[in-house]
Length: 299
Image 1 (spheres, rainbow, N blue to C red):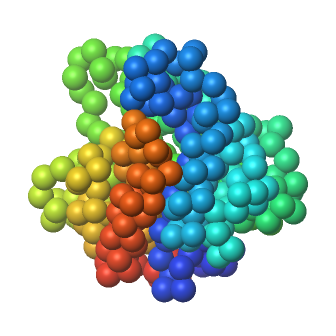
Image 2: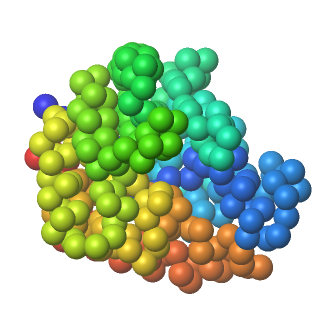
């Protein structure tokens, strides 16, 4: 039976339209790139300010809003509030980089006081797992299991996000099969029984929509909990049709970040771009989810 706590993240129709704003050093890199600066010239305060701008503009349009404790603590505490009806989600992962990757690995931050966040009104927690088919797969599953158990102890739903990356060997010899790995990752992480699974879009949202929907249906059949899609590595123009295809394949909505707000990064007036471009875009996606998604209660 799906976790009833998911009601705090869902819309009345049982679908999810959630905004991810938990990026850390990757956001710093994007702010630097779009303004012609080096990353060390982008202060922490600017990351926090942009996250708050996104929360104020997009939060009221969303059923859930994800933020990190490092730069989004005020949002998690409800100041500014992303919306009276918007469930707040805390990112419970610690991130590390690898050469050529802003986020090379992630693991559960066991020092995070989840009961404290629950007392603040935070509805759920999210853990990112960077999945590589190497000798550490068992460690990653065990880490996800610890996270799910900690969420249960804190009385909040758990969201496990699996993103797949090639091993060094696969990268070198060209043997990485992303689509097959997406399914295997979902199956393995699904064994820890998270409340909600967060997956990458098959085929990066490109090409034939029926092929994307069929791959999404395979993912739906591989796990027992409801799932949503993320937007990383999907072009902004492709994301609406990708969401529709994934929802036709059984997804219950989305928990997306970059596709929603990267357009505002280079703007002199970021708040205006968020209001005038990002809000209508999110409303378009919300209508797509309503028309195509499987309610989480049907999972």
